[in-house]
Length: 120
Image 1 (cartoon, rainbow, N blue to C red):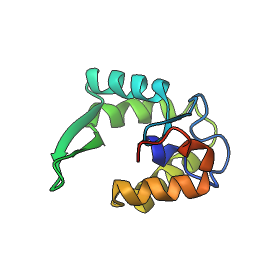
Image 2: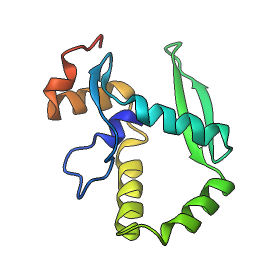
Image 3: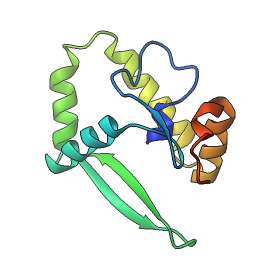
């Protein structure tokens, strides 16, 4: 998710409010993780660990019904809500099925400064 929100050529300020820093595997935002943890704790988002053949774990995040209700109730307060939803769908479609290694390489090619602390 960190890499997906640091997507190049984003219109507007999608991801605004998150301070991304170079970290072990590219862009990292503590604020984003904190927000995601709160959404999971409040039962708006489900997080599932999926074991990979490599022995590593992939985390899958999915909005739950209560999360959809929250978005729908808050959406009327947002400017450009349709553009935000469209961009989120595009990011998901383009990057969700990408292997982490492919996503990291893509992000590093677009944002080389985020590779400076890489352990990858």
